[in-house]
Length: 205
Image (tube, rainbow, N blue to C red; front, side):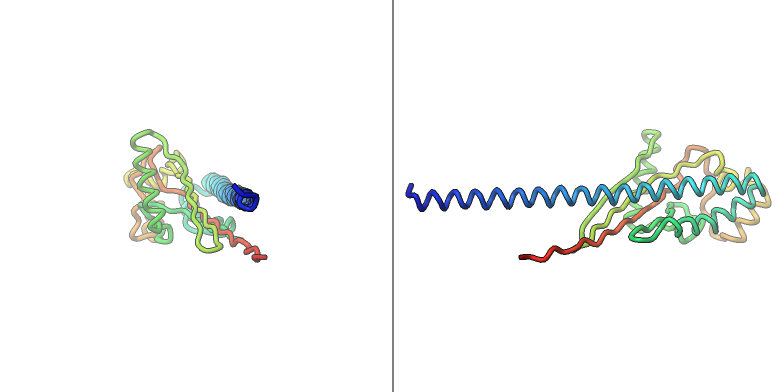
């Protein structure tokens, strides 16, 4: 091998090594960005769930089940909006809707069906995280399952066990209500959070 050929081969190796190192750094940075977005989604879901439960219990104590209906129909939507913003969109979704605004999109519907099947087969339902890129935008989809608790069955249980006043309130608010007939431990739906991140484009030198 001539000196010229040897130098050319060495230069090629150096360029390849630098390119691989840069690609590795970009991959690590991308993974960190995804991790941060997932943590934002989880934090929003936790804060919303805790605040909604606290509000629901307070209204049940203060005014009984009929006051709780107003929490789920009005206050829950307000809390979802309060925990959205700055690239975060939070909402509740379900396969058996009470409020039509809680109908799932195609991605959410697939995940809800999988969660319900998982809970039926294993007794547990796990959270779901997926992410994808479009151009310079990163989108993270996160869903946390909601399982029916004791506090839920007053408004979502079998119709014969729901107080008459609550039934009348539900029929007035939601004439096409599907969200009844549940028992404690049943799969109800999910908190769905979408986080979008617009990445800065680094100019090429």
